[in-house]
Image (cartoon, rainbow, N blue to C red; front, side, top):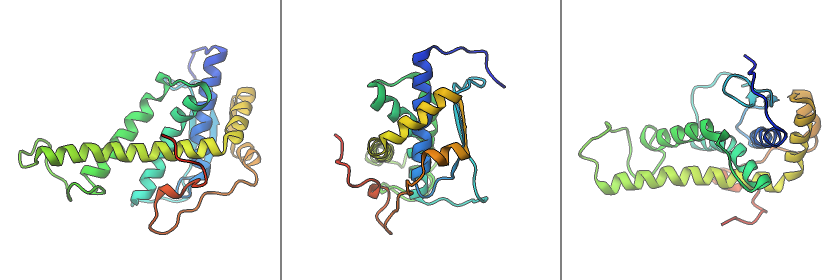
Length: 207
C-alpha cells in the first residue's frame, strides 16, 4: 500500500539515486533479471523499490549469480556514497539480505575455502581459526560485490544520473522508459572461470 510519508527534496534525490543504483547494476550484470519497474513512491516502510521480473523459474544459482545479486543489492548504497558523499539508513534491508546471502554462500553452499558442507551452529569441533576464516570469507564476498557495484556506477555515471533525473520527474519508470535511457549500453560479459572481477575492468580499482 502507498505510504503517507512525505519526503523532502533532498530525501527524494537520495532515494532516486539509490533506486537508480540498484537498477543500473541490474541492467548491466549478465545473470540478473531485467528491471521491470522503478519507483520512488513510498510504499509501507519502503521509500522506493526496484522490481526485477524473472524470465523463467530457476532453482539453482552459481557463485557468480549470487555475487551479481549481492552487487545489485549494494548498488543503491554505493550510488548514495558516490553522488552525495554519504550513506543513509535507507539501505538497512539491502545490507541484511547481503549478509544473509554471504553467510549462506560460506556456511551452507561451501562456496568458500574454510571448509565444505554445513556444520551445526555452535559445533565445538569448529576451530577458532576456521570460524575466523569464515568471517573473513563473508567480508571478502561482500567487499567483492561492493567493489563491482562501484566500478559499474562510476563507469556508467551518466546513466545513473539519467535514471535518477527521470525518476524525480515522473516518480515511476516502466520497462520502456528504462530501455530508452539505457539504449546502446550492452550487458557486461564474464569470461569463463574469471568471475565477477571482469566487470568494467578498464576502470582503476578503488582503495
